[in-house]
Image (cartoon, rainbow, N blue to C red; front, top):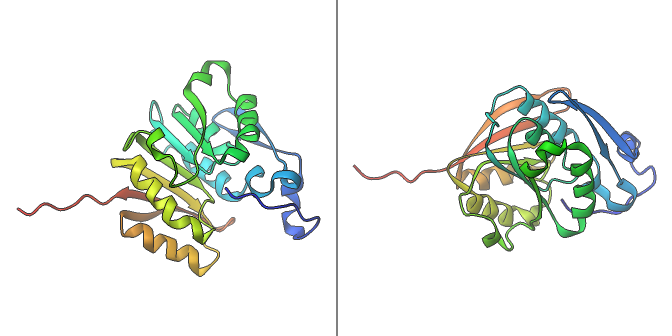
Length: 218
């Protein structure tokens, strides 16, 4: 996620994001996520898309047990933490400037027996992808990562690298602007994309994407 400076009372509706922590109950665990909007901005608060994606995972629509997973633009790490609690082996990623904060949340919320199931790693989309196995993930997760137009091409390049034909991509987002729809159109050129869930109260969509498999001539 990109970092933006904190602005006091810029949007009153976002006041909950200014709290120093947020508490959740997922996967039979109490999860306490530290937030730091004042110093780190959008990467250090829990957005609705992350909560909805965690709800979706908890409903069991995706088999997580033993699955090799990666979260992109993890921010506070809530989604990756929940995925690990539900049985996945997770690489939780974000930009270098967010890693210390991210790591603190991960360590604070994982039982000791799950520590080996989670790795926190730097990933700036489109850069250094050779550090991650090509097509090496069963599941790719992203919550509220579609909002900066300049990142769309490197994000899709990253997804192409991480995904095998059978990889499932789950993206949770709010369609705010025309450019958000444009991203989905860009994604559809490389992946099949389906809307699989919609939270009306929060206005959050979850899209499932899979790599397009080239058709062979018979």
